[in-house]
Amino acid sequence: MTPPTIVVTGASRGIGAEIAVSLARAGFHVACLSRSGQMPAVADVPSELRARWHAVACDVGEAAQIATALATVAERCGGRIAGLVNNAGQHTDGAAATLDPADFNALMHANATSVLMVSQAAYPLLQANGGGLVLNMGSFYDKLGVKKNTAYCASKAAVGAITRCLAVEWAADDIQVINLAPGYVLTDLNHDFMTSGPLAQHLQKRIPRRSPAQAAEVADMVTSLFALRSRFLTGETIYLDGGQSLVV
Image (cartoon, rainbow, N blue to C red; front, top):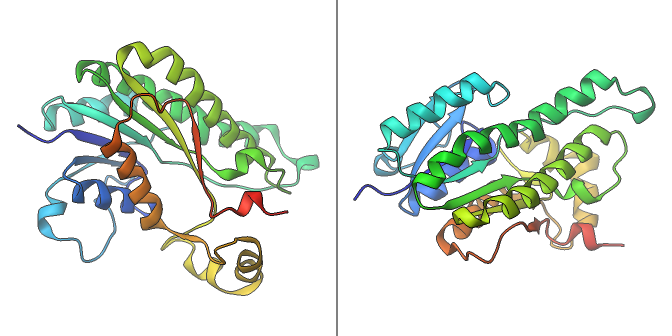
């Protein structure tokens, strides 16, 4: 039997790419959705793991592209879609007093509305599989007040709310919905910014473990949730921030 497929959005770089590696290593096939449609940019991945990746171009802000992408995934992977990771997202900042409502709405669409849209499109595929797991990537910013991050914090708080509502509505279909909310995570995209200068010094003081997470640590947490499939774990937000949000 063909192993189940997990759909991962924003899979070409950063955390999404590491999630694709970790899931493939655990034996899943991975539909890697990204705007570019390229394979995850991760070096030194064995060919047998890359063979489990299926790259598909998709802008998750566009409903028509989502529908086309998931139809393509179902066709390539035999229709057995067992899970979805809503990882794609954006970050912008700006002072609240001068934040353009259009910019606020754009970030809400990119980070929250897209989560709902992709989940809706995946829902019948998960139903056909007899259930599955939708894992949304939130942020510990959802419970913090962060200067110049009104739109981002609001969008990630909305992801938590969407998670809870979908979990309740879809439980009868044996579909779990979980919100994983990381803190600061080191990736190939932000390495220089986070390992030198004021931010690096700030994180060393604020994070009890004295350093940000590695993207692979987040990815392995994602994979463990798919491997566990504890059906009573649903609707929850799991914070993965090294205890930073607990520090006074």
